[in-house]
Length: 496
Ligand code: AHR
Image (cartoon, rainbow, N blue to C red):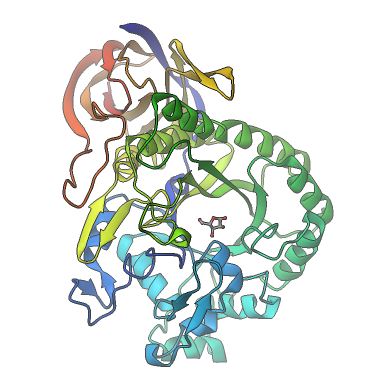
């Protein structure tokens, strides 16, 4: 068995891990909103005013910090007034991007805010730049946030919510280099300034405005956007959001060992993205006032047989769980740079937390990773070094390499959370774990793994992949642990 070393250094703090790094994203796409969240008050599926209760209960358990909505591509073709007022009077529209599905608008702003409150997440609304106007977006903000007696605020009250929603996070468009208007960075920069001018905030809620960043690690978009934006008092931007998806190797459930490595290798490309985008941003924002965000990320597999190809439904295996864990570890290792990240998407779409089938619901291996990583939220990120043999595998005719072990560490309320991924498909790795200048007194260890690297949960076997928990009797400043192949492990150690 390969041996390795993990050294955690509490004396090397990184930054507080922003809980929003474990954020989520739900779009009007396939079965995410309709069936996934909204079933309607008359549904036989148990619901709270139309919102399914099983999904609420499952998501609540993850302490989701923030939820982005209504898209995605859908956002730049969405007109918020379609989704307010009596439901029976709301217009039916064609969902342009996602299979021309008929959009009933039954789930609109009030339903979204209620869902966020039920699961305990802060709302993050993505506005329409591509086919909308600054007036439409500023009116949406006023409708949501203004506490006084303006016509829009009173309309909100008449629609059942006299108290302002207090929505802080607002996206100024989505993928504006593509479905959000096909802008070049300069034109988007000009549009961004125009929209942001009319978003000063209404009432007590200070707005956090998020600009559309590049697709993947494209420094050219970032530089040209910021060149256009310029400096000065009128520059209003708080977050800058890149998107990065791990396109599949094989299919969601069928892949070779090399394809297992290939997808994990793609997941690790998030790290250079974070480092390089932050470096470019630093040139325009040396005081780091602007947060780096990745508001869409995750695995993207080919359409599942028998499913509508534009509904992006996919299964979720142990491989997806490792992608989630490795990516969260990257964000946490860069807690000084990344302030928010939103995995795509919450229910029934891409790398989902839960899958539904009529009245049935299952949680995915990715869900379990989010559960295991919860205690990192708001912790003090600290440096951890992982010394293990690299894994070599063939990629496009050359030899590529992956770290055998990777992970991240944080400390909160006297408890250290250490998360570790063993990416090796077949080999266990035994490691000596040291904590410098600190000792611990027991704790717990949770592991997510399976003998089969393709393992996943189905409606018939909903608990095929679930974490196993054990007590850790480890005391002192050092212990030895065997990490099974293809595993995610989370330690929670009480510091002495
Ligand atoms: O998450 C699915 C789609 O991927 C989103 O609508 C879009 O923003 C991205 O291209």
